[in-house]
Structure formats: C-alpha cells, structure tokens
Length: 337
Image 1 (cartoon, one colour):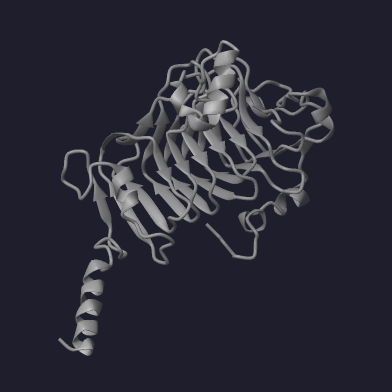
Image 2 (cartoon, rainbow, N blue to C red):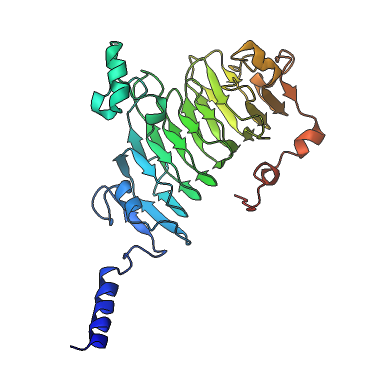
C-alpha cells in the first residue's frame, strides 16, 4: 500500500473517530422522567452539549420531579432550559448548610482540623444548592427550582455565578437563603417569577432586576440581604412586584445589608401590612452610613413611609426615571433581556 493511500485511509478513520456529537446542533433535546425523551435526567442532557456553543440550544423538560443537584458548568453557554409546566416541572434537592458530611468529602487538612476540635465537617451554605449556574447566557423558563430541606439551616435552591442569566415564569421554593446571586458584576433578570423563603431569601452581590415577580414571606424576617460592592452602581431592583406574607407573619423587613454597600430598590411594588414600618434593618449600626436602600411609589398597607428609617431614601421622579433596565445592565456587550 503506497504512502498516499495510507494517508487517505488514516484521515478518513480520524474523521470517523472524531465525528461531531449527534447533539452538536441547535435541535431541541427532550428530557423526561418517564423515558419518553432522549434523557431521563437533566444532568445527562447538559453533559452532551458542546462547550462554548455559538448557537441557541433548548433542553425541553417534561413534567416530573427531577431530584438532581444540577450544575451548569462554566464552559456551557446559550442553553435554554424550558419546562413543560412551571408548577409540574420540578428540580429539587434537600441539602442544607448544617448537614454533617463524611470526613472524606473535605480536604484532609480541613477534616483533621475539625475532628481535632471535636467537630464533624458540615456542608455549609454555598454547597447546599439544588441548581448552580456557573455559565453565561443561560435561560430558564416555566419550571420550579426547589430546596425542600427542613428548616435546619441555610438551604439554597438557586446559586448563580454566571452573567446574562434570564429566569422567566419560574418558581424558586425554599426557606432561608432560597436564591443566592453569588458573583459580583454579573447580571440577572427575573421576569414574572415566584420566590418564597424565610430569612435573607434573596441575597448576594450580583445586579438583579425582578420584573413583576411575586415575593412570598414565610416568616418574620428579612426579604433581601444584598452584598453589592461599593464600585457596583446597582444591586437588587424590584419593579412592579407583589410582596405577600403567610397568615402567621407579622413583621418583615424589606432588607438588611449583608455587606456595607448593599443596594436594594423597591419601586411600583405592592407591599403588605406585614412590612415593618421602618422598612429596613441595618444589620450592623455602622452600615447605616453606607447601605443604599431606596423606594419609589410603592402601594399597599406596608408602603407608608412616615416611619421609614432615616438612612433609607425615597427617590424623586427625576431619579426614578433614570432607573431603567438598559442603564442598570449597561456594559460593552449591549445585553438587553
């Protein structure tokens, strides 16, 4: 066999060996627990997606309960996870911060230190998530993300690290720390979503816009705990949202600053009678000098401002006019969800 023919055969074999994945295309992948889709688990569908895709790919998730600790890795992008039904397509898990772990879960040095102190390693808040999104340009639609752990500590349902994330018509269910927006400088957009929790159940350093969302308070506590960095101009913005509270709830604060310069704005929102007349809590006294807490033209029994803390701010109409999605999300990439 001459050398030229050998080269041709080897090239053909290489082409067969390294052929593109059958899922390397913009076609929709279907996930179904009953086996009627290409995959039974969402994790498996994520795994077949090509790294850094330059096209839009939909993972369609049929009705069902998917008990998965789901991670969208950093090298995946342009994926849309679309549920068949917001209330009946459920991603759930039940980890919580105080869950005791086997020592092998932790680095040996950490485990030895804890054991030497007579303690067992625990999971911690930031490992308690049900869904963690490390990637950019990811969309979630028409589904529920839940952490159904008992009230034994912080239990995150959604943990975000990526930028340009969109959540449309989704539910986020949990107790303490339901939604963690975990990376400064990232931008998130929640549209017509439902979020419930007990304490600090929307928290973190990201810039996030909540448009016409329903926010439900399950305990006397705090809705938000923003940790917006000083150099980031916007943190959490709730626009035309409706805040509700459970029947046994009597005192809810709009927020408290997890870090010094936490930024939270409620505008054109409906606030229930359970909102504490002071509105906001400082967490630490010195943060009254730095926290950025604002309101504008809210309505409802909890919107009365005559007893609001002096260190919060009521926007003027001129100031409010400057708060737009385009300005809040402005970067060099012209992202407009």
